[in-house]
Length: 116
Length: 109
Image 1 (cartoon, one colour):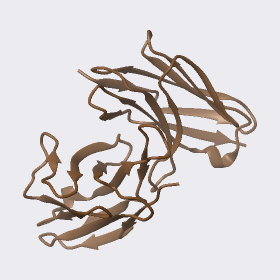
Image 2: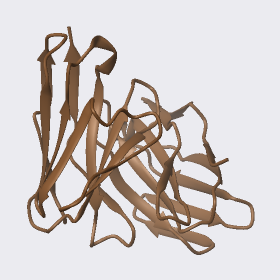
Image 3: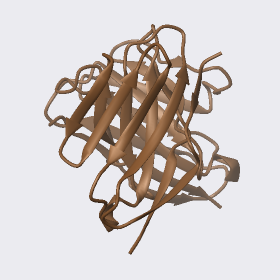
Image 4: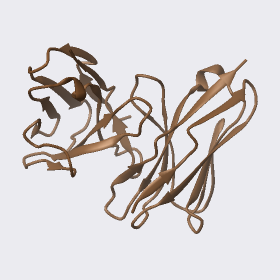
């Protein structure tokens, strides 16, 4: 099936630094990538939708300048958490439409971000 | 507003059957998904229902009633590895997924 590779799986960074998370579609072209954040014991929260070659669409309450999303090619989308703070510590997951599942989505393996 | 409700936690015994319920309210409807998520991992697809009725896939089955805004996931012959969170998600008219908070399923020997 469709595979989305997400890196890094875990990252610990100091407060004030930036962290980049990459999601690559390995055997298909992902024109759209969804970026989610999940806090412990909570639901997946959609942060933004990125489309190849155009600006990302951010959900209400998500700061565009803090969470920079780039979708420069059909196989790569990146999320950069700028000037990270401890409250940004969370599980970040990307997903792309799965052509093998009608309207379904395939997920990256997730990135556990801890800001100290 | 759009809303998904599912129980927070359920406990069942190895070898038994468990049914996880989900009710939804969305602006338009384009299907209901169930995903399994083990702790610290990304969700994996289990099932998709868009028509009323029961879809069976091995030990897992999923049911949908569009008129009632209701779905359930049925797990048979429970195994210890089935211990996970089960996420219900409904797709609205804009093809956006609205996620439930997940049901943590605990399997006891």
